[in-house]
Length: 191
Length: 186
Image (cartoon, rainbow over all chains, first blue to last red; front, side):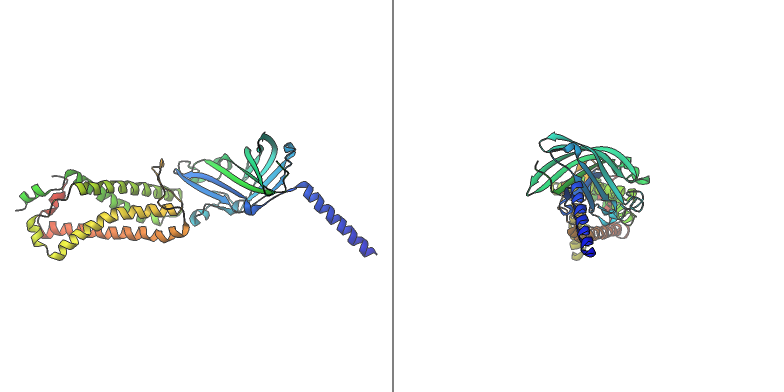
């Protein structure tokens, strides 16, 4: 009898937990269909890279974009430029300093609808212990129950101290970095 | 004996300038390539690699002009006495070496350009002018091509050594004054 009651209690609390979990973040990022990349220039030559591992929590009601909460964490150690010799450098202290700052993060502070499935997301981008407010334009499209959010924005790498010491020379590696993303999200309401 | 011959049998001044400018440039860029290949990853290494590509593309462009010039302004024939003094195998090697040199002037930079295209690092000449990719990015293909830039450069270096050795033989052993055809001093 006692045992049955406790099992019932457990079941109820588990259900409550999963319910509250889904209420906090009704949308789910599909990492396999998402990408976060970056482009800069090295002596005029475009250098393209991307992060292999990142995760996001998205609570976004298209009817109430003001209430949206979006946060991302990106594993800095998963950055790749596609060449073994440069990938060996990226985790080092001069670049992402993965040992000390294993994750970069983004936390939204506000979302504004621009109409036509376009939104402006304001928030704080933190990389390598340096934070900066950024404005990120996002375009949403939907197909087969999956919402695709894509956009790009520019940052200055030196603001975040990415590439220090001899690598701070912007005639070698440009200060401007374009961050490009395409995120697949399930469970979002109709646009 | 040979001084009158040379007066009539000199190379065109443009050919002479192209010969010396490109000859010196090729030797310098070969040594440059040997030096930079083993540098550790650093801004200096990336800088030198870009300079090497810019220089290589410039040499390729000048070599194309040189080839066109050569096609429209044939080399003076070997002085009769010298040609008669050369055994048949030497004449053959003399011609083959020059053809191979011209071929490698084009092949070495083209292979380098193809490699860097396949490796995903397009050439942006002088950091300003993006050149078209010879191949689309393909890491496996890049790895396959990479040694051939080195092999072809070493083949070119060997032919340049052979060319210099033959020139020195004419100058110091045969003492036939053949080099005056290519002298900058006229």
